[in-house]
Image 1 (cartoon, rainbow, N blue to C red):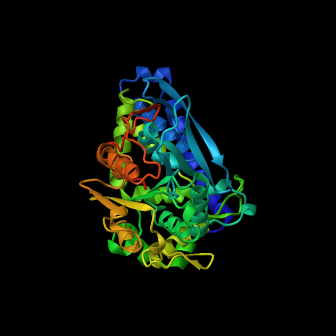
Image 2: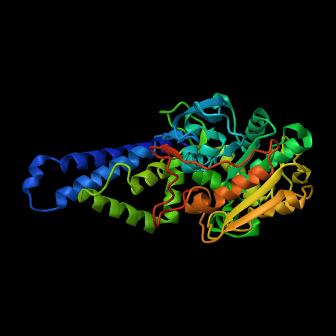
Image 3: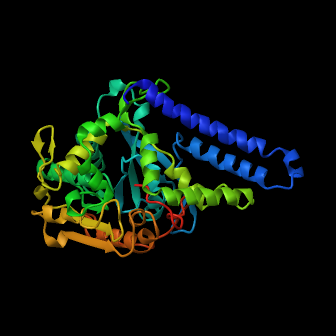
Length: 439
């Protein structure tokens, strides 16, 4: 599995399917086919269009698509995305709203490194941007990082978060979504013990595996069932010759995508069948719900092998965060050292990725934090995606998180009117009906 041709073969298969889709779309669209009183050609063209778009998205990094924010003055303020810190495996991005007074809330949104780009949180960003100065972690596709850049594992990930928090200052409020929740907790603990003046004002953990043993899911069952040797043999490959990271060991995005789809194969199949029929009827649109969702969902990135394997081994198998036994470069990280950073936990009642109880376990580890600085929320009926980007987030969770931030802010901002960001994809829309949970 580790040979270069294996990775290149997967890319060749993707290219071939994209070409087949383009060919079918062109062939079925010739004007002469209009003389045939049969829908076969329309269906062929529709299948080709949907197939070509789907396979082309797998190697494209989506755009943020957030262009303006409506200010309190009623004007549209232009939004630009700027790199504030550049590092080999990920950048710290800032969403700069031009001609708008600085908002008192300052938020660092920690995006997951779990196969998708940070743009998976586009609607989360769009919902927070009108009410805060916002930064986000933008992790790079491992296939584009030369081997000379070195390794990147869970300790390096935590080091990046420490650097980002230290850079942004003690009045920053951190929101970690899914996979980075345990490592964000470790970063806050490291700072609390060693650089207390740099620790964040608050930390909100959304649907993350702080203690995976607290509640079993298909993800945790897989983590316990497979051995590290099996995982390394079956999932890890060398990047092929097409990319700058040639030779780097990675967990390929295309392989991750196949496992994502397999978890909800029937629902995905029905979604694509419905889209083909809608396209054949002329009812599909370039930016309809299906395309908006799958343009993001199908855009996958490679993870470094050491990050993926250390996540499985240390976070899931050994449960180092849940046991308060996590170390960075051999130094113990004591979560009980957090005494000033307020911590809020958000979980979804129907979360099948990080089940209720896994993230809540963080509060029991915070032995040095006063109860007044701890909070939790279980969203009824919400799945994994809904608690950070869907209707549950917009209507219920987001206001609670902003109130928690205000209540624990060191500069005590006053809550103002909560406005709306406007952009090509910035309306904050969630998963289409019956859609999958992508993280």
